Length: 386
Image 1 (tube, rainbow, N blue to C red):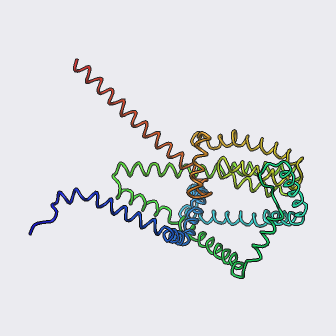
Image 2: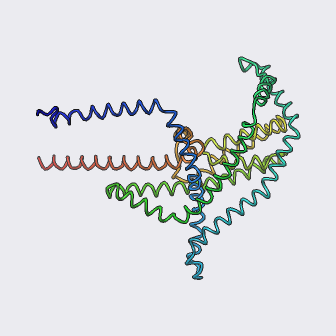
Image 3: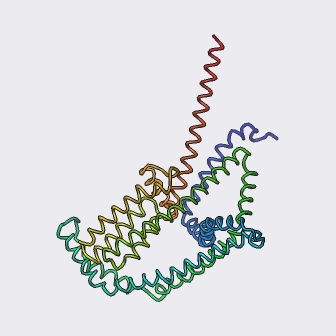
């Protein structure tokens, strides 16, 4: 019986077969994209506590390493033998102590500031109305802002909420508390199993990749780990300094929300470039609506000077040459990181781009060196020929 296709013909048709298969799979993926998105969100809802637990463990591993080195130098055998467990215990005790200080000192102040804001809400509301009237008078916008219509629509939407809609925030709060608890517990186990996890990844990389490639991958993995740790450490110090200075400045200007705004500015400072700018603008707006335009102008002058000194003097000294990038590259990195992973992507953008920049520089250096060797070899061959 005659064969339908010869092996050569089958080999020639394989690319067309794989192309048709890729088209069919792509069509099915696009047609079922909502199902895929729902499935991905469901998977993320399951693994997200462990992801955040990994992030917490990664951050707490920085002080854990410091405690571990100190305990390793101890002459007491009980401490030196159990330095890993004791260092983790000390870090979590310190973490809980900071949470206690936050709950005991900062949260009551924030609550009192919120109560003060609510008590004076009518005054702030009137100032907002005056500002909107001024904007409408200047005719900056094509259509005037009608605050009454906005408020009426808001209350209409609130009136349509049912019991299920009202209970949904409580369900979300319970789910968030459970996720926080699970993240915290998983972070402890991740810290204890850190060395085994690193060994496992090294073995997998060595098995799946050639020796020279796996060596390069591990080298850049260590580098990005070092960059992340340094970035978190320096941004924490810089945020604490910037938040403290801004809080003191706003307190001198008489703002009742000085501490709250200082803490806010220190936290958003983790987002590079845009964070401190956004925090400064929010602080100026709050001062404008709570104290008036005169104090807001003074706040704008002092805060902008402080923010510029921090961005151009303090941050470069803390970060050093490693993270020195052009402002355009920083903006592009933050935009892409935010588009893919939100705030976490914006925070992680700078260390990742710094490593990618190092990789490109190494590749270019290798290619240039290779080109120079080829040129030198060609020149030697030319001399030998003559």
